[in-house]
Image 1 (tube, rainbow, N blue to C red):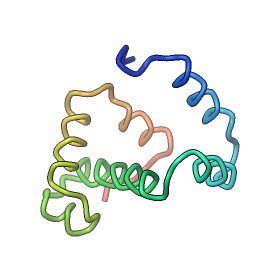
Image 2: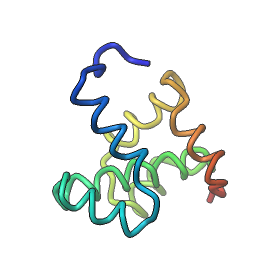
Image 3: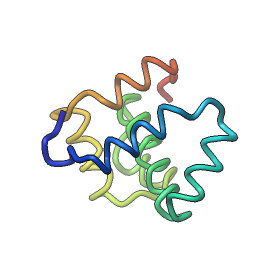
Image 4: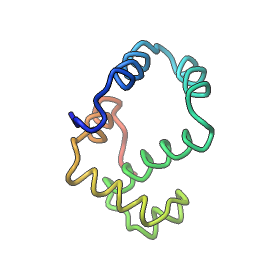
Length: 98
């Protein structure tokens, strides 16, 4: 766990997310908490991570997702040197690599 983000406010956010039970509840909550662009950015990063795990090139990923090479590189760095959060989630929801 990163001490950089640890705070009471972030704990409350994560507890709130863990209380959500359905996709519809997630839409309601996240539409209230995030902007449309923030939600799209988060979704884009997950798609980029999925495609990186599927051995796609940066060019293929950029064309399909619209992500910048900077975003792709940042996600790739997290996949290789981060806290394994993407892989943990992908494994739990059984995401197929493209």
